[in-house]
Length: 380
Image (tube, rainbow, N blue to C red):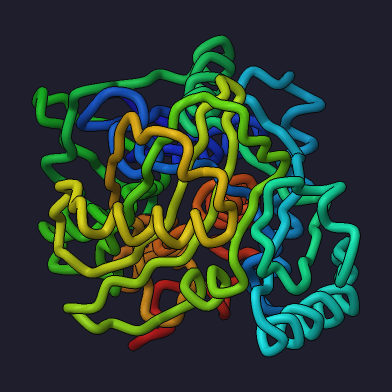
């Protein structure tokens, strides 16, 4: 029977950084995924790495730390994932929104975040903002990454350093013991792991179900529309002021669909337009009414987008937690099983710091600096 120090379940952006952080600590690691590389939420993401959409507090602190870790990653391993600290521009279109945006900028500045509030001169940042723009906030440190390229880059790095990937293998059984977990794969192979790290997003409870355990995470659907290449210049992440409220919302109305504009250009020249949030179970069908709503939101911010054609749209599932904070730590009742889920729309932004926190759980006695705030058992 094969033995590893840590078995990581899930090869999306969270599992990728968890595997990397564990290997950097010298642990023997295996990564298992029932699909190919990053078959779930990471494949349907726009790769936001943002502080601009966070209120002061835990999530802003984690995001700031994680952005710094993304920079260290690119410096150490190179940039094959289109990591681009292009900044964010948040748009206020009324005096009321401008007052709220000015307050957010001041609060984040007090936390040490590099940002500024502008009531004029924003055309130098974004020349295509609409004529009803009243003010903007600018976060020069916010960034973007191409999600799949990031997962591929980390997978190549890990394979080059001895990490085994087992694709198209599901977890059929978990048998916790005092000194580890026996894992049964769908191939019939059994692996002895010191710890099992579940980086399985909205599907985490499927893996935990045989143990009679669960964590309070549910899928929250989101849409993205892709616009053709054109002559509309988008220099940074552009979001309307309402995007922050949507991103931080913990409302669980099963019928409501929230939309708020966020716009970004890709390295290839296409433009991504989001966003939407709704609870629709595990349904990932594209709803054209929702796509039309979010496109209308984006056109209100950047009117010239209406000249461009939509070339495709897609939907994905974010792992939502009741308090809007991730769940990172040991599962109550199975202390050798570590979960890292519940990041909602901030998974890519928080991936680097999540890897460090999970590695601390495994290597340093099931604890990390945010143990109490992020512990999976905090809702009990």
